[in-house]
Length: 246
Image 1 (cartoon, one colour):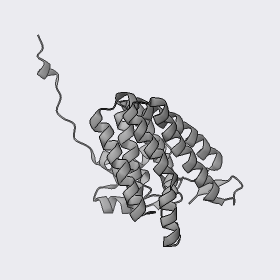
Image 2 (spheres, rainbow, N blue to C red; image 1 turned 90 degrees about the horizontal axis):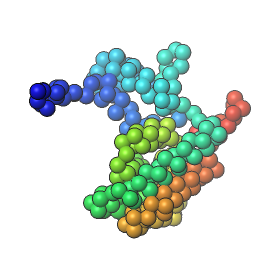
Image 3 (spheres, one colour; image 1 turned 180 degrees about the vertical axis):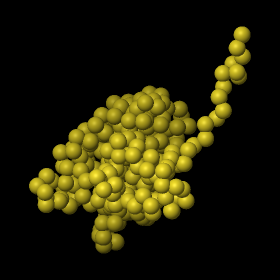
Image 4 (tube, rainbow, N blue to C red; image 1 turned 90 degrees about the vertical axis):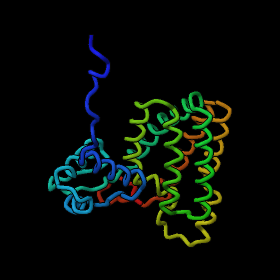
């Protein structure tokens, strides 16, 4: 009879390609990369101290999902997105991320809920002190992904992560990254930011195990952010299709 341990295989170490993929993914999720940003494969390889092969493999994976765009000349760019494409992506995010919040309300442990509440408080603190900063973007992402992990659905988490890879370069402008606004305007925006109210609603819903309200809070957070971005974002009409760009 085969012993259970006989079926084990050596632990798989993360390949260089996976490390590069994770690094680029985090840059997309955090808004460090923005629409129209161009990437040099050679520069990436040099900065990450790897050969060109793992960089090409990682970029190919992200391009296959639509998070990056590779031209016939092998130039790599963060793609632009038409207003219609952005609206469609927003709808899909509302459905999937709303469902994740609903599941989190039903399945999350008390410890996970406490963690989400702490991250919501952290987001408000950072928003007041550093509106428009990378720290504010990171705090918002950390909060959202804590909720999605608490849903306990690896398949749904995978879908949501892929959606954020596409949306990240745009949606993070809702928090005012590099808007160039005067400091007084930054403070006003921070104190009235819509996510503050939606995150509070979410936390109350999680505590009450109210899945429907949790789903609505996340969906509304996404919807309002999308409308603000579409209303205030610059539009590129050189080739006729309206494209949302920062």
